[in-house]
Image 1: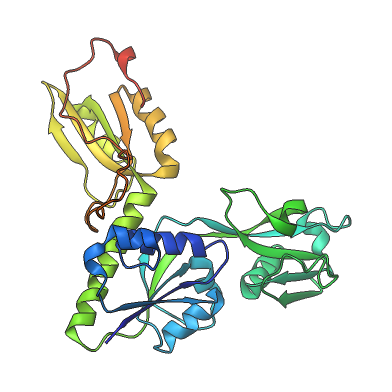
Image 2 (image 1 turned 180 degrees about the vertical axis):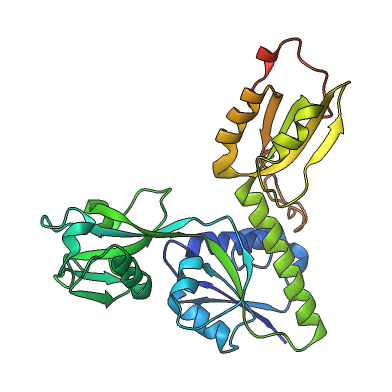
Length: 318
């Protein structure tokens, strides 16, 4: 039997989903083959499907697993179990328009709005007390205003990159909802081999997602502050606390990327020293293929605990 996995065929979520699957060694790109050369004969088939159809295929048993956006799952009229909620692949459903009469969300009263996620848009408009003339299900939506089909569009975009195509010339009216990558589950494999491969895929997706969405933070702090500082975050794994000198400890814990800067500032304010961040890498998915050009590591290995600096001002960020 073949484990059937789906990813979106295009859009803001597709690239992140493919990159995450490639990192496991089960993807379809040359990069994934180099990541997991021992997995080439694994019973896995990857399907590129329209993102809006993925929840339906999973619910009807056509797929075993799928990597998609959380907004798509929220939009779907069917219920599918989310087995992994990953802090990677951020994207946003946002409102745009190039109509000079539509400058803010409040101008959408009586307007036509085209979007691939009409249910989420209707809920947002209702909560904002905006009575649009019509919400038009349409994918892709980018050309809807230029063609006269709609007065505004609600498109799924990656907030980290510059807009391209028609969206580049449109002004943003506001955000509807933010999303991230999730892994949904469909049919359960019948044979032991495929069930084992499914377990391995999920484990590697979890590891790759954790490495992509977190930073490893290390700092020295007084023993009396260990409980307070480790309580500042909810980590996916327990903190590591190592004795340093009398009354001091070295602490290591995983932190979400977008919370790192604020946490570093807080630790320094509390009197912690030697605050260092590392980007984790997952090395469990295979070895570099022969002939592949070696790359510089993304992060250094963790150092052994150090002696304390002579003054608190010696605390530094790297």
